[in-house]
Image (tube, rainbow, N blue to C red):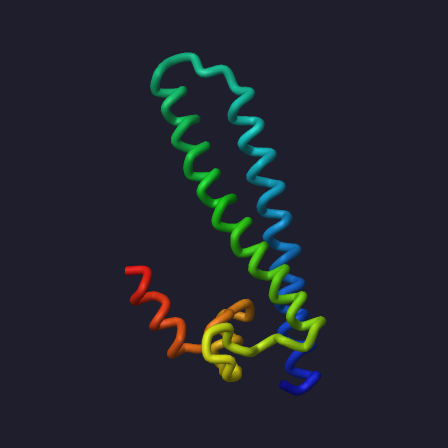
Length: 117
């Protein structure tokens, strides 16, 4: 992969990392505010619990993506970026444009997804 392409993906990943970190902080602050609210009746309590569950799921998903991005940024630094972890072939540029932190090429991703399902 050319250095201009690496710079392109590194910039995208670092920007997404910052965005996710802000999102997680915002959601965590919101969860703290929700838990501090006094629930006057059962419907208020149920609404607060429902919002907390949804936002916790969002945070969990974003923490997973953040972890993947950090690993990917490490791969860029070490020169291992853009190589499929399964077949060790290059991951296509178009695939990386869609998901810059992809660890599998298209063919191997399909194999992994079939194994999971």
